[in-house]
Length: 533
Image (tube, rainbow, N blue to C red):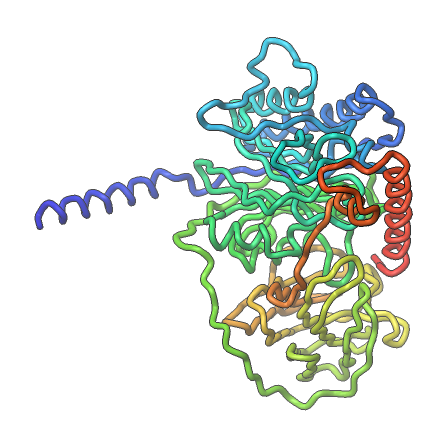
């Protein structure tokens, strides 16, 4: 008995000592990258390397500056090495074989005395991590050979993936992740992998990897936090902003707040394409950010990040239905936002309590304001989003409208005179995954408001604030349709009915490439027409 008591006390002492020895903060750096493009001019590997070298030179300069500011970890954006691609052949020129990380036999290419032919980019990244003594996360293209166990092989003889890699302070590869959730146009370039749960441990937390569109879905993002104990997220992205509920800084910081993690988001800076907004976020909201739609140069963000003390996995809430008694619902109108038909009701008077329901989403707004000169409305949506994929939204939002309430999805960045001396946006939904967002007319995302949640009930509360939008952005993963993502070669086999394990004929493959390229152009045109920044 005494033996067990002593062992138990020693375990407690050891645990407390370990906790005391852990740092309370670490320093993170993310880069909002104004990319060097010219991708379409690359017709061979040498040309591709020349383009990537220009972006790697920028990365080197920024890492040197980050080191001077004491950075422990550095994140570079999705497509940050090469920019846009125009098909599978183009992506292949920018790809390298990336080995699996191994503790037993570490892959540390910068320890070689000369630059090897083939993994030139891996060598450069390894060298930068080692020279600056920091963790480095970069998005690149992975090329993997076909193995006998595979049912089919793509027409160019290998698989290629949109991939996140991480090197440690010694320049050794410690993590690799193949992006699972591809945006529709990306399927022209990349194969779809099985779901991967990739993470790595540091002295200041467990970091999980996800890329761009992954943040919209449950796998692997939510599971990394709930089941694998991830406390910090590495997020490389090429995020195209959609107002009012998909602005980069607002959505990503809301994701961090709901899941209780640190979130390091590095985005491409390309205002012409609505790709702006990078930041460092934590469980309490925004720590550091940049969101600039006018400047043409990149921005380095460096901030001290509190270490998340995560003792257990994300707690699962009760699945019971929520029944809420709300005030009388005012007269409503409907408007389309990002392809979804929202129900709205206009705010009237200097103060009030407004209720609105759509399906099983129940919204309520309690407010006082200084003026009625600006048009504001409470909106709700409960349904399947279908514009560029299928996934289920549950949303409550307060938004500024224009043109006599005919436009509620244009970000108005000036001429706002109304100040909300108090506002409380409440949402009762059927999902626990609700990401809070508040956007001001000057796009300052500083977290000077309160987010609370209890079960399926969520609330944003603030005061003395000018508002463009306040959003409770819910994602109901249980209502998402089954997503069977086909690779390009699987599509080819389906269309042309080739025998399993064979490569489509050259003529057939050419027709497939033309069809897919045409489909991608049509999709992009549709998005350009229907999304308003």
